[in-house]
Length: 347
Image (cartoon, rainbow, N blue to C red):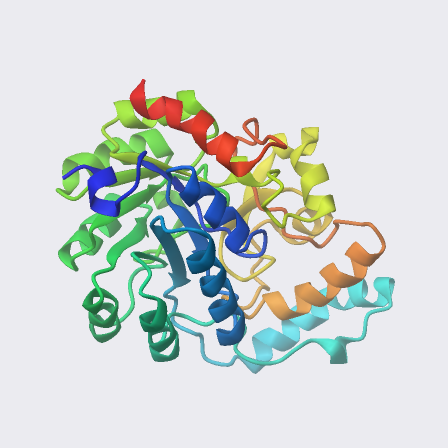
């Protein structure tokens, strides 16, 4: 079965779910253009998730994807958290930010029973996961309404692990991809390889369709991925300048500048490796800081600094997520970009 048949889409092109820089509008535009739009759900509270799902159902009858994280929340580490606050203290003083304003709570939550209950009301046709898969019980609940299940793999071992647990397709996320690495069997960054090398190896290792992700920014990139045996391509960064994205003005400015040519994997924003454009805090703390608490506990303190700095027109503490190839970013409607990218599927 082809990927288009499996997912019920017109072209084998997926929009990457990008938490913090998009909502339902981008997903709707891509789905209506024949691709698979995606809604990132990891940072959405139940009421917000319900609102976004209702908007999608009201504005498209095409398939769409909802994406969740599957990390294991870390145990509280008072000493590490205190060390992180101490490391950030000079920045708080510089910006006049109050450390007491750092929010407490779980932050980003993994997929859970509450989310499954909510999804069952809307029955999304595709559900995807990052950082592995949820428990077999939760996965069965997703399958109960006939949803197709996707998940990201950053190594051949992860792809095989996912196939053994019954995913319908594997997203092979190369090291070029922006945002969080989907790695889950190992935290060794040396295991992370480029998209084309990864796709070819994963295609040979599993029998389910493989979707290429990472560094794909135009139709030629899509064609290259398909030439390596991918059944389709997932694109994220190229959509960040589309009007349907909620990318901030500062982030948009960075994506259109020379700064976008240099990206790194950094853990200083959330505690987990993610690719973004180098800015002040990445240079001064990292990019991979031993002081950062485990994911997602590094995020609350950094979020306070980000808000203060952005109010001053500065992106010093903002996670400027971007893949290694921002050349495809265009200020055009997402539907137009989707159609441009889709030309590579037939090349």
